[in-house]
Amino acid sequence: MIRVRVLAGLSAALSVGAATVATAQTAAAIPAPVAEPAHTAWILAATALVLFMTLPGLALFYAGLVRAKNALSVMMHCVAVACLASVLWMLGGYSLAFSGTHPLIGDLAKFGLPNLRASVTGVLPESVFFAFQMTFAIITPGLIVGAYVERIKFSAVLLFSGLWLLLVYAPVCHWVWGGGWLANLHVMDYAGGLVVHATAGVSSLVAVAMLGPRDGFPRDLHPPHNPGMTMMGAGMLWVGWYGFNAGSALAADAAAGSALVATHLSAATAGLTWAVIERIRFGRSSMIGAVTGVVAGLATVTPASGFVGPIGGLILGAAASIVCFHAVDLVKSHMKLDDSLDVFAVHGVGGILGTLAVSGLAMTGLGGAGYAEGMTPLSQLGVQSLGVAAVCAWSAVASAVILLVCKLTVGLRASPEAVEDGLDLSTHGERAYQAS
Image (cartoon, rainbow, N blue to C red; front, side):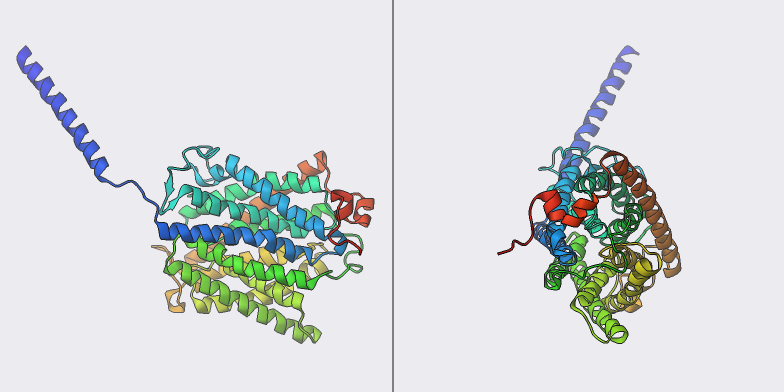
């Protein structure tokens, strides 16, 4: 009996050992994830393009729209936000957005980027995926800069932007792109209609409501000091947006090409449409109006770019200018809110419009990519609407709390003397232009 038990135990041990060896051999036979060089090269280029949107694109676009004595301060805001967001993204923002399985927020498993050199995400080295997503984390709080120019403390810009990145941007990014609850509902946001434009737009509206308007608003405001600078910045944004939207395919493939085409057609159509609207209403078309239309078209197509065809791009571009043009008037003339450079009216409204419109424009009959299994245009519209409501509500509430913290600590508004002298000189001790 003892011998039988010994033999049975030995047999069992051999079986377990054989199974362990077989499992190990099977695991060894499955190749480890390997980054694809072509896809990696494209996303490296797209990363540079998206950073180019902020520096110098957004900085020039915004700087040309303010008075000369505040131009340098706007550029400084963009540079400082880019630096701060990069550090915070590495220290925790990336991990909160793209790690863990919780539906609301990630964990800190990727804090400090351990093992980054050896890790692969999909077909990309994780270092490349991290850097690409970092450029989105840079430009999103950078967009908000346009709402509070010419009157905010520099310290408030830094504190607000840092807290906002961790408490607003990172959670919403996790909801939509990091496997969170909106991703599980099959929300469609290809490149940031919700994650980027809705969050920044709604937060901008809250910021200007709490900060107050510029002196003289709305009657005694100076025109843009350099429309040519604004045009150059808008051109850089347009080019960089190829990386923003086409890069969001995370591969060098047909999906990236389709997103690029839809993006370009939306921008072109929107620029023409805005110019026509101005011609009808004011009797002439302005450079500022045309490039504002282009940016509205780019913001509106962003959530839909990889899901719609060329016809969808045209429709979104035309709709973007019509809706955003009237949103500018609504915010400033009727709501009496000094959203100085129209961040909510262009980016917020545009991103929300595109997020809702993709529900119908993604149909294959219009050249779109179709829907997830079990989804219809109507059910997709329900999911998109839920996403808009949740993201806007969270952005508004969290931004209000962050701004209150800023107000109670460093303060929000620059002193009347600093505003009168111009933030270039009073805050940074420099001028954008020196008298000869």
